[in-house]
Image (cartoon, rainbow, N blue to C red; front, top):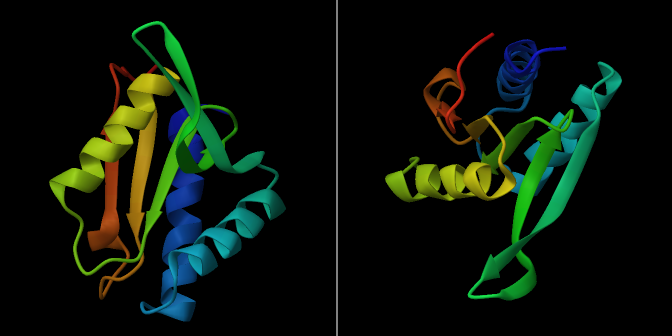
Length: 128
């Protein structure tokens, strides 16, 4: 399955969850439910993955923690905030760069609609 197909599946499930539950829950609740829905659709989901960082010849284990990695190629960062900011986007771009992953989705479940809470970010990715 290509990353674009995986992204479409994630967005479909996020919209469905948001329609049924609405805004106002903790990020961890949305993350748990989304992970369960994606696994039910046959996708491999790794949650709360630690990400080491190497700097100046030293390795720092568990320097970062990403919310989800789907099928080893799509990074998800889940938010439940009033509004997404450039800082949230920079956080995801940094994860993509450090993990050498092509695509990430920033999903904010606190908006009136899920559509306004979806940002797709790329790291030197060109569609197949």
